[in-house]
Each structure stands twice: as structure tokens, then as C-alpha cells.
Image (tube, rainbow, N blue to C red; front, side):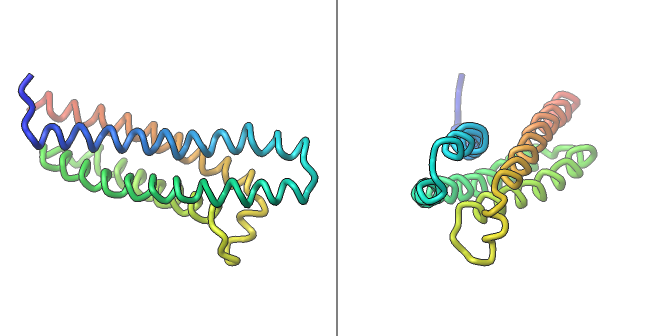
Length: 158
């Protein structure tokens, strides 16, 4: 197998993109379905708030790094895909939905881990918003698979 620099960069970009999704969404799933219920069941409100503050302070850095990597690798992956002259239909509408969904997921991730008073209402109902974030991420992952299949079909048809 002969890999040129562009192929290596494409491989690294896809790998970083997927790893960032796994880390960010895996962390959200863990928090929503393991950490939050366990902490709620055994900790007093004061201790629960202190734990939440410490966890979010550390998790925020991970979330910000993952979002930055996803934006950079997503832009590169976009370039790679359109470099292959992919057919606009059905790829473009799915890409549009995916980008809007990703923006919402990024917003929720940053708002839920932040400390801005403007997003305190979101954080007060974090179980609901984490559930929405996770569900939306699942839709985005499904769209990604469909987009990859559409891209492969377009390449095969050429």
C-alpha cells in the first residue's frame, strides 16, 4: 500500500475526528447515565454541588479540546470529500443537517460545562439537556454513516 502525504493526513484527520466524538459523547453518556444518578443517590445537595463543580471544571477542558479538534478535522474532512467531487444529492442536505446538529451539540456541551450565569437554567436541568445532546449526537452519527455510504457510492459510480 502506497500512502502519500495527503492520504496520511486524511487518515489522521478521520481518526482524530472519530476519537474526539467517542471521548466527548462517551463522557456525556457516562455523566448522564452513571455519574449523575450515582452522585444524586448517595451525596447530600452540598456535596453533590461540590462534586459537580469539580467534575465540570476538569471536563470543560476535555470538551473544549474535543470541539476544537472536531471543527478542524471536520473542515479538513469536508475538503477531502468535496475534493472527490461527491454528488450534491443526497450528500449536501445530510451535511447541512449534520452541521446544524453538530453546532447544537457543541453549544450544549460548552453551555453545560461552563460557568456563565446566562446558561445556569440549562445547567439546572442538565439531565434533560444531556439527554437531548446524546440523542442528537446519535442522529449525527447515523447521518455520518449515511454520508459515508453516499460518498462511497459516488466514488464507485465514477
